[in-house]
Length: 495
Image 1 (cartoon, one colour):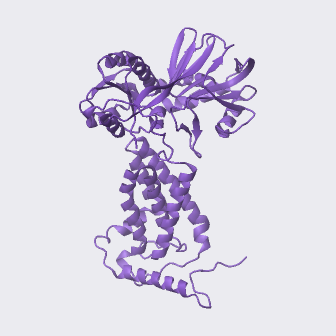
Image 2: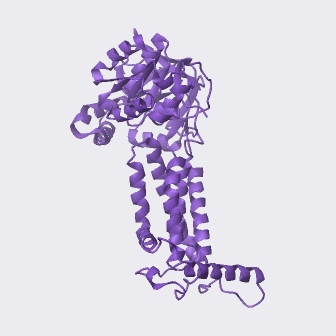
């Protein structure tokens, strides 16, 4: 095994370019040591220490996520993921590749010295890499939060030269590696800005200055009515109606009778009810993300009240497809998904326990209870043949897996039903997990998919639960699923 070699020390022979670069690096370090940095003495050494082991950046991520907007939470998560990749790269490759000693502290005033001097090699700077990775990751998801975090990251990077623990080139190399890590994370998990739906087909919707003519019905049970108040600050002439869950449908009908545009804030079920009302009355719909996951709003690139307010003021809108199902004498609509089999059972179990132990705990308990239950796959006649299925999923438009990210839609007006099935057999938990990991474009013995415009299912047992947009009903005889292409006009901010 060969010993570690300091590649920054000139070897015998002529290396004029490297010599000049190293000389410049030393000179810049000495200039920084000699210069009086205003207001830096009480701040930068403490800031440098606070960034040890990423503590500063975890605190910054918590502060960003505390704003409670979906984009801020994603920005915080992306920043931490970028930091983790940068730290892993630094510790496994960077520090081992170039065994450069730390600078001599003689030119640096003693008041700047860190109480504990680092003992690792100097090139590249891990602190600069972490700072740049976190700031770049946040900025790629949310430029506004990136602008807030960037000065802090820059200060941490400069503190490493100020305190004398790194040469300027160490910091530059670390920052470049950190930014590269942020872009590598984006390649694996694209940001929503890169995967947003196309701004088509554009629709004619009334421009409502200050929200005049917009009536927003908010479900108090969603726990996110504060987001509607942000919308009201942006649109002071809009009318806000807050109601309990069992009053939502009635209030939507009342609002539609006097509104030029109908607004809604709540979970998937509330948005579904508003879409049905908007369809009946021929009104454009404004969706404020107010639920837990907000699939429909986020797939529209509506992330908060501010962006939606701009769309309402300017009359920016698109037309989207609406899924429709009929069973017996019942007709229903869905904006996101419809499913049969295991998932409706999960929804029912979750609703049964949610008010007792909370939503997240209820979801975990529902999964355990449903997958451990002694049940048989449902039987469905599809295409003239009878099939045992654990799950049948129908998406309103094609769902994609973006890198390693969960599935989402990039086109809400493609005219397609995205049909996925998990075949029946033994071990439903294993089959469902393998289907989930296989992704939407893969094939596996447990998983199949097809794109259609209409689906007809027969042979279903009466009373089979059917879930759509978070709601559950029972199948009565034959089930038919089709589309209403470009039937609903919704406000969304356009590029």
